[in-house]
Length: 502
Ligand code: B12
Ligand code: SF4
Image (cartoon, rainbow, N blue to C red; front, side, top):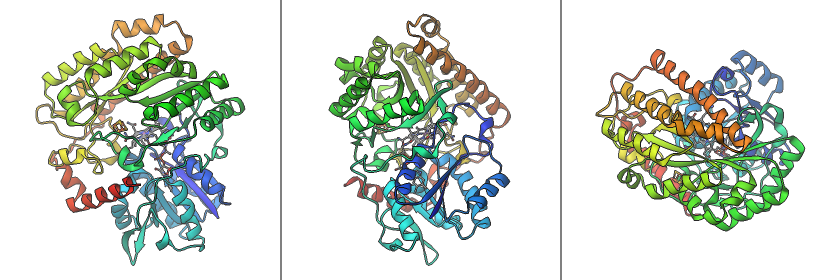
């Protein structure tokens, strides 16, 4: 069968920040599995090259796919444009089946199938096996009703089969690298780059996060096989930067150490960038030199808040002391730390924000990402936030970079100014600038310089956007009203629990 994979979040994306683009990793994971099942697969990465509707339509008609599969890693924010594009293509090529997968459709299959009548199937959860089985069923080799992890329409009504089992052996399916031209993709300031993944899932229970529910059990790839794949991509395709998709790659200490050692044994000159937890960094203080030697240049530490009570409320399982120590240890090994800080968990006041700023400076991270809380319905945070008002109903802005939840004490313009002020204070401190000038490693100096350059552009872009195009909802509805009746949420919660049993 002819399968077209489409990665799309917004049209003419090339005009947006940043210039660097990473390959659409989730779709490449699906691709490996379905290519190996004997299908002809093509990828349109509309994030990479701006494409208008007429051109997309023409290219799709030229390929004449039997199935068109949509996905995007900015899942909820991409949904409106995916719906629109899917509609366009379905009307033009009605015989093609439309399939949609990823985080957002996994939890919103019912609404999507009820409103987007051009959509034929939703793949819930991990896609490698389920997408392969679905294509076999569309090809008439099995019955849709017998599959797991699929939602579809039965007599016109949205229906879901039982959840798919999690993939326990992450090396069972390969990544369809052959669909991309490596030259097209870069990160870290123009360096050839890909996304890679060691593990899926997370054992922690932070209330605002959907990772545990989506991926369920924490699993990892064979450390040696992943190291070999990285070495292959570096030596044969010139990939210099590997951005880890894992939320929490270091959860399994032994496996993680084996991976670091396997990478070191390959003796590569590469840059590794990832996210992890501050407590794992502190736990691994005896072998942080291996992180460095393997090539890690930066870790994003999801600290989210500097207030002990808020950390407990969001069940972060972290303390201020651990967060601070992790930053110190990373610096000792000349690995950059990027701390996330999130506004909107606790109906902050100006005094809270001022205290937050002072604490961020005291933590002294190299980089900061100031974000806004997003009350996704599939997270426990939804229950804390459901009565709160929202000021943004445009889902393309539910990206952690726009305020969604209304604060009682601070109007949006003032919170925005606080967030920008916190960013500039953290990044433009003389101490931070001095680190750029005096860092002994050219690679790290490049990394810091690139972040400043990009940060400056994003910062100005966000201010202009706020002044000229941001319009907040005048009649705020509550989070619950926005999402609809609460009994629907109950069903999603229980379906997540089912998959967590495995
Ligand atoms: C790497 C990453 C990025 C990279 C993406 C690089 C790339 N080109 O892939 C970058 C940094 C660019 C990025 C950007 C954003 N991201 Co991001 N990102 C991630 C991260 C850490 C990993 C994504 C990934 O590759 N996962 C591994 C793959 C294998 O998983 P996957 O993509 O979900 O795909 C699997 C399944 O979902 C399913 N599937 C997915 N798509 C499809 C399609 C079909 C047809 C099928 C059948 C199955 C299927 O099968 C796949 C294999 O099992 C995730 C968190 C996470 N751990 O997943 C956040 C995450 C996806 N990002 C998120 C967000 C919000 C964003 C941004 C909006 C943030 C921002 N402020 O700008 C932007 C979007 C940018 C844009 N252009 O619109 C959220 C999405 C939450 C949501 N509800 O929508 C996540 C979940 C993180 C979180 N905080 O919760 N991101
Ligand atoms: S925020 Fe990070 S540590 Fe917490 S549950 Fe999500 S992935 Fe795990």
